[in-house]
Length: 161
Image (cartoon, rainbow, N blue to C red; front, top):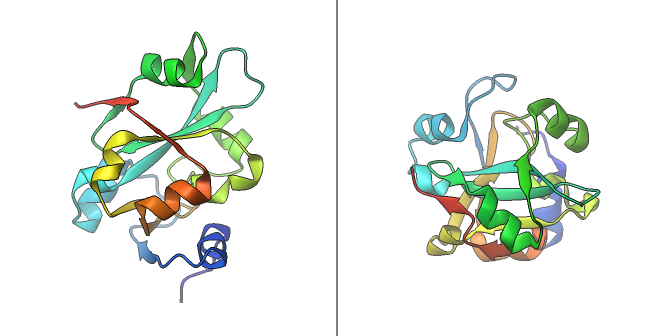
């Protein structure tokens, strides 16, 4: 039986049907491309959650992009209305979120009220996979429901490899 995480509780409270997908060792770090390979799903369906610092902001933001894409910090800064944005160091991301890198989930962080940005290509898919809030566990969720629950702004914030 799968341990019930806050991200799952949040989806259930909002009446969202989701699928829990476990992979690998729970404490092992796998990047999003490895996760897609382990699960046998296309890399453009697995979305990684990145913690980003914005110049002049007291709190970070979250950017969700497909496993095979790179965050374009200039585009994100423009969407955020700031001059500069930078990726948070892993240690800072873990300290701010309380989650381990490789298990950071926007669904597990809604109480922080951080700005959340979802990359535009996500709209091409009815469902995407996102972290459940711990390493080794993904959630397959409807894209439109995810946007509503995490209050994501959809924008073109990535570049293809």
